[in-house]
Length: 391
Image 1 (cartoon, helix red, strand yellow):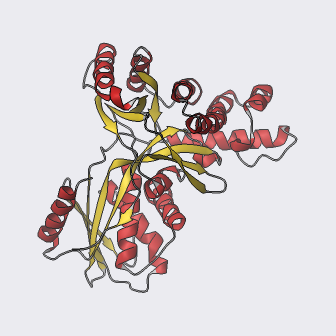
Image 2 (cartoon, helix red, strand yellow):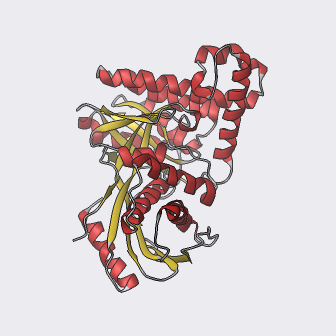
Image 3 (cartoon, one colour):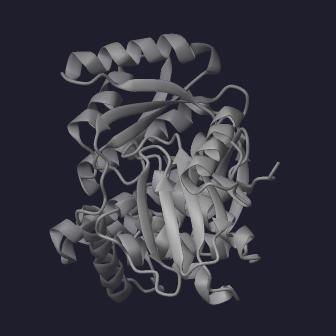
């Protein structure tokens, strides 16, 4: 995210509302490196904040109405400050309305605000433009109304906005990654304790973002259906295992193999994915600690295979990226990133190999998929969300 875009956003705010903003915040998107659909199963994830994100600029307006403008499209939405309800006509605005509703009980004032949202996270790319929107809005509005929610409180407010105002029963991965990102580090999150630990990437690791243009959409029920199957599986294992099972995090791969035959076959297959992913994340952390990127890359490939086979949240475009990567020696590992069902894949390379690996991957993808090319660019693990100084 550039200073130029921040300046442009300030100019757009003045044109839209005929005044200057008094609060501003920025939040990045995120890339998930290992740990797919493990967050709501109380497991482990390795993720990173990325170098694309969203600005939210705001100023109180003294009225009972909140006005929102999407700076990229200039679409406008409004809602009552004392009764923030979702709007069917402006789906993007519901993320902000939900965040405002989460902050409202803490605010002493009931007047509304004018807000502008602008960013450069590709929509539908699986890089969590939604979390970047929620967290940037949460930080800016908290600043505007004199509130100081903790980082985890803010993450939960964003999560609740998606649950109640958008209809996606997401975990906390996206919001936590956006808040806790650090340059050149992965974010290791334990989603039972919510302990967050930075994990150094090392100088020999770089990532490529591979955007397929297969639209990534989670509100059609596929995401929620898989979460429901995971919950059903956890209930089954709680009955058949001798030790406590609160979530799939408490089930080992060996236990899945031994006891999966006694449950619904679809739920068993879905459960296999987060169970295996938890073990891969812990192994991946050890690989990074020892600088073993070859082994880490193999875990990424195994993660994608599990998504494809057990969770069925991949698609032909994402499979094409990963299949092409397997035939390119410069690429150490690749997998889908995020909820799946479209969006982007992420590939691991050495920094010196970014350009030749990108070219080879584009060519390999084009041989497999006709249509829009796969957009590939380097991806840098970056700093997390922050309130911006008004100049």
